[in-house]
Image (cartoon, rainbow, N blue to C red; front, side, top):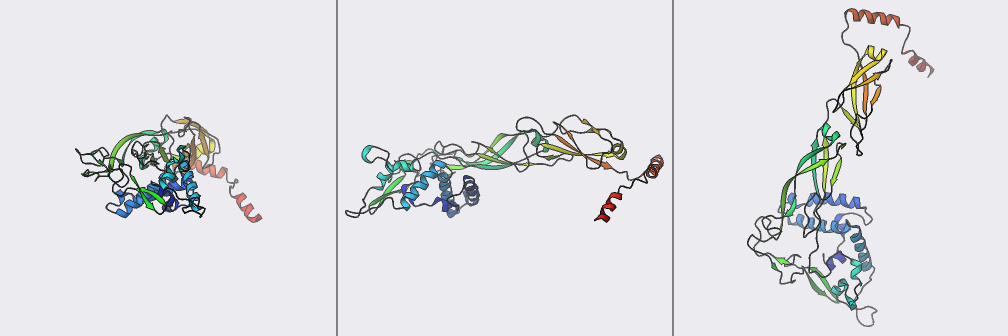
Length: 382
């Protein structure tokens, strides 16, 4: 980034966010724009590629709290006319814009260069490290894997140094040469009245090196798409549509920069028997009418262990929920939730023989007990 870019470029406008946008809003907007304008999704579209570079440059500044603060201060300083050029008697003075950013006036350091901090290379002689891009991927787990955790292979494609040229951009057997225009600085000074503005060298596009014989795989960029498979541990208790961040597992950085992060969206398959509510598992267990009316002990299956026995109280209504403690999903602290057991009273479809006679006798014995009587009393009272 040149001093001219620093003063003139509105990175908030590039990303389309307000100046008071939160870090989360900035990141969300960047990821959306990066997917839309990524070169892989717009092959051969020079405008999309240039837009992607602008978006990445803006995010590099605004995603870093310290750099964003320095950028805001510098923009405010120049917007308020903090530095002007002029001649004698004007109350202003002339200076070299390169000296302004060098922080070396008077040999004492400090200067205005400290205001701008590390936003760009003061000397222009060495390119700064650049953090790798974040990578997004998805994985589908079985219900059991989501509850207990699993190690799964993930195949990802991201930008990395080209293997053919080892990131130099030059064809095998050749090497880039130092740009004669900027002498390897990557930036050049351009006079504009009393100012000397620093901007990226057009001949080498800010790289400081010129590739005469480009690599046929990366076409001189030094970067290429790299596919890799890695084993990733998905923690126990993960839920459907949950996002997991794996720090440092994204795309490799440039010039020694830190790698980006990997964001994994987890999808969980449904189970034919068990459901889930947070850290608790759910199951519906059918019981007979005599069991519900008289009570008793019923056996209930669990997800990954032996069945448990629960005591069904007499007079249990349909929909009653009981709890088997410690038989649910694994929590972050290693403990487990509960298994919520819902009772479903099953009514026989066909009744014959002794069973039919017994039910007839039961109906006669309970004829005076009308369960709908209270309902009608309440309706009349209303």
